[in-house]
Amino acid sequence: MAALSLLSLLLLLLLPLSLLLLLSLIVRPRPVKIPIKDRHVFITGGSSGIGLAIAHHAAAEGARVSILARSQSKLEEAKQAIQLATGIDVATFSADVRDFDAVRRAAKEAGPVDVLVVNQGVFLPEELAKQELDEVRLMIDVNLIGSFNMIKALLPAMKARTDRRPASIALMSSQAGQGGVYGYTAYCASKFGLRGLAEALQQEIIADDIHVSLVLPPDTDTPGLVEADQVAEKTLNGIKSGSFIVPCNFVGYLLAIATAGLSPQRSYTMAFVEVVGAGICRLAGLFFQWNWYGSIEKWHAQSKQ
Amino acid sequence: MAALSLLSLLLLLLLPLSLLLLLSLIVRPRTVKIPLKNRHVLVTGGSSGIGLAIARRAAAEGARVSILARSQAKLEEARQAIRLATGIDAATFSADVRDFDAVRRAAEEAGPVDVLVVNQGVFVPEELAKQELDEVRFMIDVNLIGSFNMIKAFLPAMKARTDRRPASIALMSSQAGQVGIYGYTAYCASKFGLRGLAEALQQEIITDGIHVSLVFPPDTDTPGLAEENKRRPPLTSIIAGSSGAMKADEVAEKTLSGIKSGSFIVPCNFEGHLLAIATAGLSPQRSYIMAFVEVVGVGILRLAGLFFQWNWYSSIEKWHAQSKQ
Image (cartoon, rainbow over all chains, first blue to last red; front, side):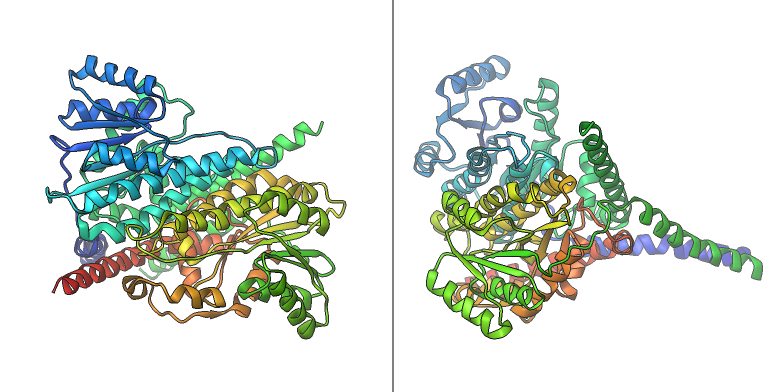
């Protein structure tokens, strides 16, 4: 009987080990290391919030940094802040990402980019029934079309680059790009859209050794300094390891496992966690729905009184 | 020893049964039945392809049907086709979904709608590096902004309806709204976007008894597909595969079934069901049985998804190696 339990124990260990081995053989695209030191990192929405924090971190790590935003004065302030903190001079470019010609001019001025961080975003929460369509269009235009504009403008030089080391296009999504939230119809639409773009784009540019990362910070209107700093660090780590999905905190990891879907996964250990954990995370997701819809019901019942 | 194995067997059965019981208690929103007979169904992109098939079926099931599209001529043909097939007269409205004022006028003319099927869509496959931004904007404008326009125009009357039976807003997505495919950056962006819209919207309108459905057809035999096939990059065909297109009428049947059962995610074939389980994510699930299948099956399907990535990225590698020769 001891032999039987030993045998069943061995089999029990063999199953996950075989899975791990299998995954180590099939995960694609292959893992990659993307250096940022001495390379050109270009950040949109780089004059404030998360973008500015990313610019700080990248400059501190020895990258050549460019930041793009609309306001010339905010760009100047940002440039000075980074100078003070790191001694490094960043290049600044003023353009509205919705204006492709302006973006193309900035791309020409900036020269070839190795790591493109498409981070600009606007966020105007409102119930769709109450929201002006102008605001809907603004979020889709800036967050989604703006990202297409950036990629179209900067991709040709990335594909034609002489430095054949791996390059990166990182898109700033959000946890609201993993699950829908009351009041966020247009914002969620724009952020979910980035994932569709990213999944397809990675297949199109893998042969050019350009690696797509989708960063998923938790949602905050204006992130505090500490939070922006954490997100910046996770972003750069994600970029450097060529990770497709880049969560920024523990909840983000659970969300990433729950929504792994048909996304690529380069790390076979993460793949293992996804295969083994997806079921439990789906169960958690269903509990969240129970909680959310329960709250919605309760709130409406109370407001009727 | 027999007692031990019997005990372990019982425990083995107890686990899934407890899970099933738990899920039956927590699945939200609750199940719902949405009748179509004698109710007003409005279908955008309703003059051809999947939209026309949906309109025809809804009419055959006794609904009062309206179809919206751009071309007056195609709307007339569609109206005649519906009359020939079902004897029913569909109302027609000519508008471009990108034009909110036109859509609002159509909404006023059409009157309150019970089941809004937002089905219009355009589809131009191309590698993003080669694609004109005009085409990108076209797909996002029609497929995504156009859907926002439709919902904004029709939602007020839906919320204010006197007939308090459950109503429905159905959005036509695509399997390309569940997985990214080479050559479909803008199309995928627009269809993934619909899911973000749908997940948030359902939370906002559940208390009005309005239920959101997201339909995920594969390639469907329609004039739209014929156009798209002319432009497909070769790698798209290799990766998307020729899993055989569905017929528009089959998709229409699945769509109406999904609407009537208030299902949030509506797959149209077996492959679609597997994709739906793999991408269940944070979507609501009203059926505790489907929820059980999702919890139990999503891990294996993630594994399948990883195999697909292995297959696709290998095909891409191979194709590029060959084309370099």
